Each structure stands twice: as C-alpha cells, then as structure tokens.
Image (cartoon, rainbow, N blue to C red; front, side, top):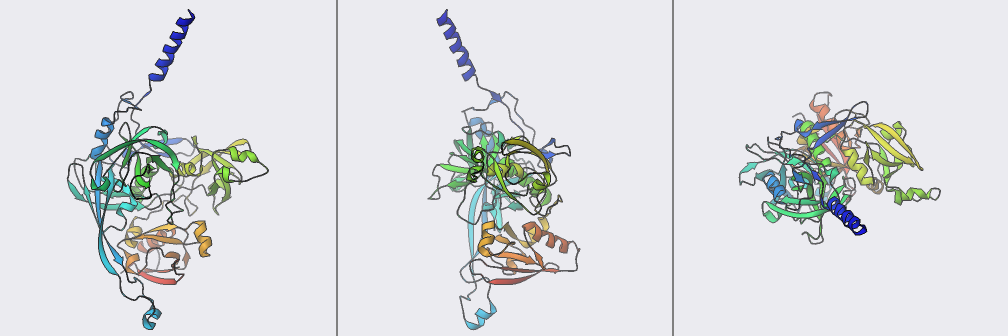
Length: 501
C-alpha cells in the first residue's frame, strides 16, 4: 500500500509538472488612468489600423518550442530598409571670419559624400506605418522599403525619438500584413523569443534564443547618458542589419525592437538588446498623434538602493527599487508627498526592481495621468497618487511635428555630468542633423544650444515651443537667434534662422 501511494504521488507530480499552461495571444494596450486612479485600457487599433486576428486562449502554448508558427506569422511583417544620405567630409562647415582673414585653421569647404546604409523595420498597421530604429533612418535623404514579397516603396519619416532610438516611417502600399502587438511586461527570463530581420542584407532571417534579462542598461561609451536604458536582453543571434527588426515570442507577438548588440567586433558575440514594446509602442503612438513624444515625469533623481551607503539604516541595501535622492524644481512626486530617502517599489501595481524598471514604467504614461506609487519609507510601506507632468511642469500636449520637420535636427537633454563638465546648468545638444534650417544656418552636430531668442533652453520641447509660437503667428518675431558653444573647442557661436521667409 505504501508503495502504491508513492507511485500515485509520483504520477500526480508528473502530471502537474508536464501538463503546462496554455496561453493565448494578448493584444497590446496603451494605458491611461482616469481621475480615480484606475487604469483604462485602449486598444492600439485606435492609433494604428490592425486586423483582428487574436488566437483562442488555449490555441498556442506559451512555451511552444516549434518556432514555425511564430516565424510564419511574423516574417511578412518585417521589412528591409535602405537609406541614402549626404554627409560632409573634411573641411569646415562653419568658418570664423577672424580665422578666415588671418589664415588660421583649415578653411577649405567640406566635401559632400553619398553614403548608404540598411536595417530592418516592422509593419504595425494595415495603412503602412512601420516602426524601426532612429539610428537606421537618421540623416537620411531618401528611404527605400522592401517587403518580404519583394515589392519596394518610398518611405517617409513621420517622427523619431533619439532618446529611445525609435522611429516611425510610412509607406503607401496595399495588402500589408502587420505584426500583432504583445505584452513585453509579461515576458519572462528564460522564455523563448525569435529575432526577425535582415542581417548583412540577408532578407527574412529568423534566429531563436531566450530572454537572458529584462530591464538591462547598456552604455555604448558615447554621449548617451540621458537615453532610455531598459532593454530586453536575449541570446538570439542579431547582427548588423537586424536593427529595427522584430523580437517576437513563440506566439508571433511583437515584444521588442532589436536595437543593439554587445560585441567588440561589430558582429554577434552572444547578447543582443531590444527596446520593449511597452516603450516603443507608446513612442510611435505619440509620434503619430502629436509629432513628438509626450514624456511623463515623476520629477525625481534616483539611484539603485544598493549604491546608497547609509550607516543609520543598513536595511536600505536589501531593498529592490529606486531610491529617491532629490527632486526636480517642479516635482509631481514631491507635491504628492514622496520624500528623499523613499524607495519606490511599484507603479500602478507593477513592481519596480531598479532605476531602469521605474523608467520603463513611467514611460508608458502621458502627462496628466494619475498613477499609484508605492514606496518603502524606512521599513513602512506608503502609497501616493501622483499626477504625472511634462518637463515644463504642466500637463499640456507638446507638439513638435512642424517645428521638428522645419529644423531638421534631433536634440537631447544634457546630463548632469555634462553640465558640470561644461560649467553650465541648462542647454540641449544637437545630436543629429538632416535637411532643414539647422543645417542650412551652419550648425554642426554636437553644438550645445543654450539660448534661443533670449530664452534659456532646458529641453527640446522648450525649443519647439518657441518655433511653434512663431509659425502660428503668436509673436512679432520672424526668426531665431541661437546662442551656444561647441564642447570640443569651447568656441561660442551665434546663429540666425529665418522661419518666415
């Protein structure tokens, strides 16, 4: 009898372990919060036209190791992107009159050189919207998109966001097969994923791996300290040309946009990184609706708890979350009652385990949304309702479509380290230049803009608002007087731009 009971118990354990859990396709939702703090879910089809093709709840196993279903469902949604751009080589774009007359420096004009590049993109709607990486299309004079069925179309940039390295382009085409959005927050470490893209111009390439980590930060060594760093790390093989391609789960749902690899040679060496669709989806939705990303902010300076050395309370080192060390001048978190020393542990019920995960959570929301923030205050849990705001300290929509297109440049906020190094406390950096007013007036990449029309510039939105006001006739001014400097030389420069020709 004892032997029978043991055999029966083993049989039950085998059934429980091997039975598995069936999971269906989860549609991607944008999250908003009403005045009462409860979450309202809006189907992404309200922004991008997607066909309804959800799988039954028990239709596909969550850990199905047969990848053919996911590959077949995704491969026609991934496109090949080829860009052509004109770059200046040698010489000087800006010529100081003093140096010209006295013969100092290299006064030769720069040579124009045509360059080509390629990457991948993912069709996200039936009316031709495609998500890709900003670094794939930045500076492009022309964009050509080739579908998996070999049809080619001219691509148009709708908007881009250097901070997340996400861009939105559009083609005019019929019979498109967009990908289904997934939920990157439900993605688990160890879960199988596929990378679909065009490495080395080898179209329609599929590789498989597992999720190695989530919320991973990764510094390239360039001046990207203010970029959004909360990647999905995977060991699926990703190489040059995969940038902008799809990272999908075994149900064929888009969970990330492949962005970079860890390598000393430039080719795959074990790990790749993707922007979670929870971030990328919100970014492209904003770019389509408003022309710029609506960044919600808590207004806190945060560090990892284990990096904070506090002799009076050693328990702080054992906590997982984001430790509040300071507040912005206009801080929604401070207004709600959060204090220095609090460790933020969740946002709207979603666990916060690090600085990166807090950043990822807040990125999903719009200025004006109200979120429930839980903190650990020296061992006591407290909850606060915080109304998120934008960088200007309000909840207004910031539109940068027209101004961004006219200026033809991308900008990034200076990090605190940059400000200390330069000896300033405000300014934005010109991070990329394409065709537009910025390039026409002679401004080069890397220029730090401090003042525009006698107004101090703290964020790109500050700059856009000045341009928008002029374009809409809200001021007598007809142009821009830009003051700033080049960090590599320390040379100060003034540039004038006519907006109303």
